[in-house]
Length: 75
Image (cartoon, rainbow, N blue to C red; front, side, top):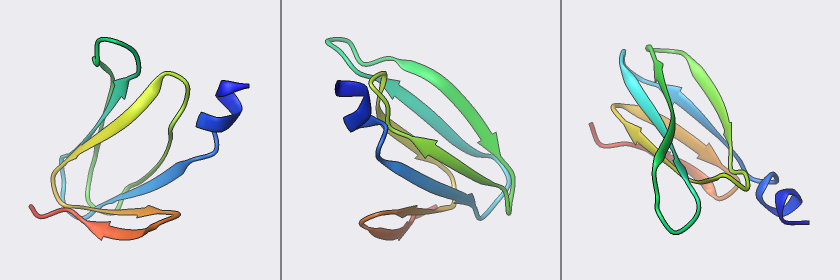
């Protein structure tokens, strides 16, 4: 089942400053924003790729942890 494949990937986003924006983008022929969150310094969000979410865009200073490793945004 497709949803089982997509539901397996989680990422952790930790805000390093106030006002970090996290935007979920849809799958399909037209990519659209479908969800937005704001984090303040020290807040953490656990996000998941699903059959509806194909990408996550992060604006601001944040640390992102995935099964592939850790990355920091260049603010």
